[in-house]
Amino acid sequence: MELTKAIKDIDTINEILAVYPKYSKNYLLIYYLLNTGLRISDTLEARVSDRNGLRGLREQKTGKRKELPISDHLAEKINMYALKNDLSDTDYIFFSERDPKDHIKRNRAYQILSEAGDMIGIQLSAHTLRKTYGYLQYSTYERTNGQQGASLPELMHLFNHSTPEITLRYIGIEQENLDHIVLNTGKMFSSLGIDV
View (cartoon, rainbow, N blue to C red):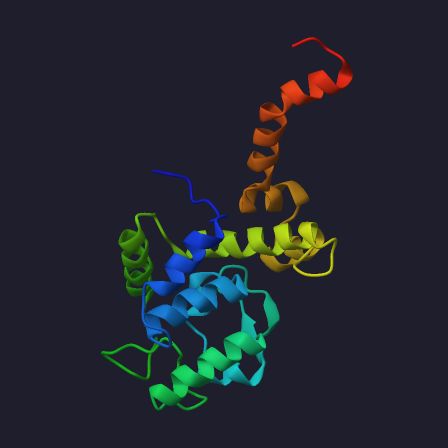
């Protein structure tokens, strides 16, 4: 079984977002996961009232209470989707076709994501999108000198990780840094005056 990794290529992320029609349930599932970094179990519990800007939840895995702000971009997508599907604030965003008063189950969400990945030739899961969210937040923070994105301590808190090392490994930064070190050894030797 292959290790789940963050998607670091922006073109691939855009391809994933283009697989399903905009404002469809399948599209919104991908968009919601990429914009919140939530686990799938917490995502499926989302209600249309999220469009109002704040979502209170108790994480299913940890039992911890969390207040999650909803970005204007995500709120707009939820609103358009709700209007298109005639949904009220109390309805689940990811409602089941069999029982509209219930949400889709994890296996259905897995199918939606897996099919999207198959359409562009990658393995895609909710965990992949959660790691991608973390990677994008951290790499943006580093690239913009803290003006955008999330710092390592912020991501640790968001993901409920106990150490920075766990978070870096989770979002794929640790391996990226190790690769960079190994690939640039020759440049380092040259800068030190070592004949290579």
